[in-house]
Amino acid sequence: MSEKYFPLDKAALDELALKYQTPFYLYDEKAIIENVRRIKAAFSVFPAYKNHFAVKALPNPYILKLLAAEGFGADCASLPELLLAEISGMKGEDIMLTSNETPTKEYIAAKNMGAVINLDDFTHIEFLEKKAGLPDLISMRYNPGPLKEGNAIIGKPEEAKYGFTREQLIKGYSLLKEKGVKRFALHTMVASNELSVPYHIETARMLFELAAEILSKTGVRLEFINLGGGVGIPYKPDQTAVDYEVLAVGIKKAYNEILAPAGLDPMEIRTEWGRVVTGPYGWLVARAVHKKEIYRSYIALDACMADLMRPALYGAYHHITIPGKENPAQAESQTLTETYDVVGSLCENNDKFAIQRQLPKIVTSAENGKGDFVVIHDAGAHGRAMGFNYNGKLRCGELLLRVDGSVAQIRRAETVDDYFTTLDISGVKDFY
Ligand SMILES: Cc1ncc(COP(=O)(O)O)c(C=O)c1O
Image (cartoon, rainbow, N blue to C red; front, side):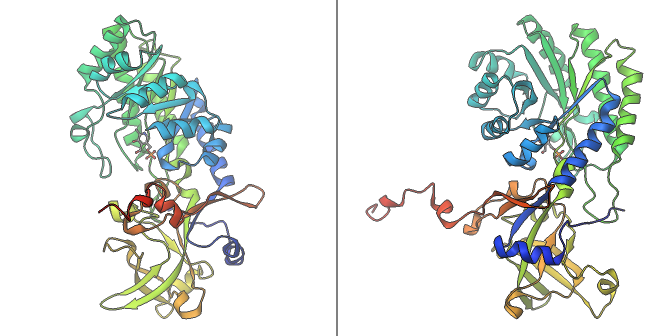
């Protein structure tokens, strides 16, 4: 079971909404820091450990800066993400470029920054050499194909476009060694939002066995092993969060059984977690605008799937609470609850935050001029970042609840001017 919390009560939210119009994202700084410290404490069983936070999960430099202050690095998938990491004070090998089908300019930028380049394909060895030159340290991404089961979000490894086969990896390390590369690392990313601890331990075991094989076949001694991202969070209240300590101890057991006898101790362990770092500590806060009764009852919010795409994209569950109406006794009472589809204003029928969800009776702004707040939980990773402008929808801003209880705006909401910013409309009038 996971407890769903929201850090502000209704009165505090009322006050906040006087300054910042809904919808907005709210992140809890204190909870993120405490979570990061729990992760680091659990993984202190290894001689060295670093998480490269997956920037794509929450690409905001204020958040990245606080993660950097806690000793986390960044995992970047593009040039703008590399720049975000740099702006946030991360430097050199604190930054890892794990991209795929990587364009030349991203390789060049990563090389110039001294970031760790994680190659996605055998042919990229030559490509990187030609376009940017080979750095001292190179990592490669392993795709185990049929040797490892994937999961619903990421799919089966053998159908995934990412990474090297086992044979290509062995050839890759030998080739890079011949070309004078001195330092090496190994990476994989085989699951997304996976709550099973044994699954993640198995992934580590697979990489540790591969590291031993690489050493025996090529003489390459890896400097670090990156277990990738993909640790899940309990979106549903009846799911249980991953226990970091059980996970770290399980991985350490595999380390002791495989890496140590192979002569690979000490080995630095790295991860690329995003979702589990910030996901449970971010909320999309909206207001109910309209109520519609046709064949179902609909509550329409001032947010839409342009603000949070996961329910539409994956059919993902996000817990919803109504501040001021949290009392479970009330929520369970048939007379005080309704079954709603909670929707946005986008012209797509999958623009639904919840389908046939039993919720406290919601009052809309059409009814009372204000409307109930509707809090969508676990939106702190892969949330706003996946937003878009389809239907001319403008993405909402981001607020950070600071440790001292104050609130900082860390990204403003988009405006109509932002929507037009890439268009030069001066030429339209005389175009035809
Ligand atoms: C290469 C890579 N690393 C790390 C992550 C982060 O995954 P998560 O946020 O699920 O931990 C992703 C997510 O898509 C990814 O593609």
